[in-house]
Length: 210
Image (cartoon, rainbow, N blue to C red; front, side):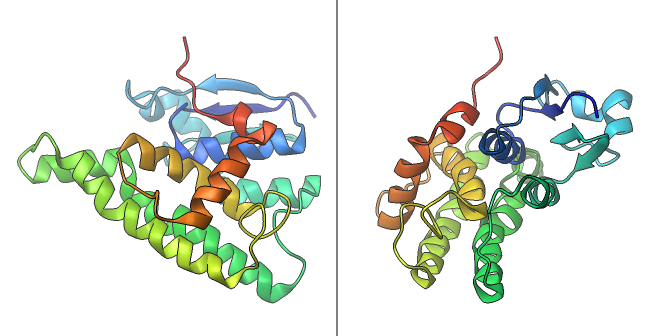
């Protein structure tokens, strides 16, 4: 099948999700950085991997996969990670919880989006930070409320890490980066502490190359 290769960027939330999942699965992989700041994601070489010009791209099992949520589904289904409950209703609720961050908050908080908004507003220096805070905190407040639909556990939806945890932790990294306060959200904060102590999450934490 060949080796597993992850084309990623150290601060990419979507790449962070996949690093966590690959660690949970115990899959050894080679990381190939794609520097978004330098525009490497728009290079012909990377566009050949993913016409959208996004990271991550995962080469595994003879496949080249894009879109982090789709790749998480693939890893869950092929490696038995147990990222979703077995009950269909709980699976739907868990997906909604994960998607509230990965589908609703993350895309508008992409730095490329914030910079474009800043440019349209006349290039205000504090625009990206204000933009991020505007979306991140309400998104996390909603996440906290959605957690009320699940019994209090170590992680978001159970006693082992699941899809919601994998999507939440990168967003909390961004919240801290942009100073979007969530200290008043007890369950979110408890999940963060539990995940931070898990080896698979700790090993996936963003570290700038070099």
